[in-house]
Image (tube, rainbow over all chains, first blue to last red; front, side, top):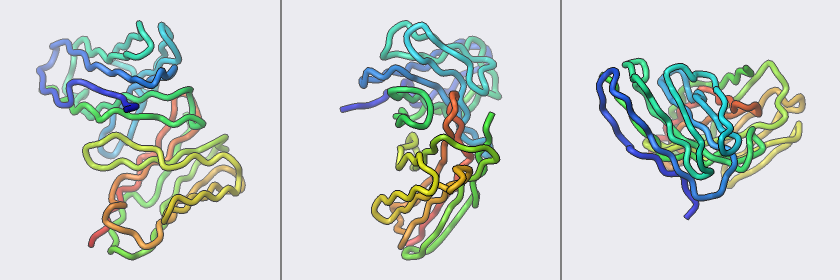
Length: 114
Length: 108
């Protein structure tokens, strides 16, 4: 089954404790991205990757890191989480960039930073 | 960054009613997508529109792309409770830009 998986689905952590949210896709997609979704602000892109070892900032990259060492995986790293990073996070993948291509979203990771 | 304005923000209707939601931009789109997001899940693509004036139908959902490619609408005929969700439009850029969505609630 074609899918994007994220782990963990739920995470409660404390300020400053480094964490990684994993994302994996099994569709051999070139393009992967991370979004955060907040009430009243909608879905905003954090980082995206056009291919292995190619990453770029989205609209809200501050406080986040990503890596793309292999095609299927695109982890999101929060080196020193803060309460304003409490949010619902989605990983997505697609054959290419932009709205000519269907974005396949993972199920989401709900992060709470206290 | 291209901004996408969606309206209305919230919509609560009775089963069987018709409704239309809108997505507008001050800039011209090369293409536009509509997604639906159900509670606890990620968005799922409904349709991509590319040509100005284009109309696409997906069962009871009708999507229209404006002639000038600066606006789009989604019309649902005879809404059902299963249509409940957040409807998002997404613009063409990299990074992809999403509107804030219309949250639809269809009451049985």
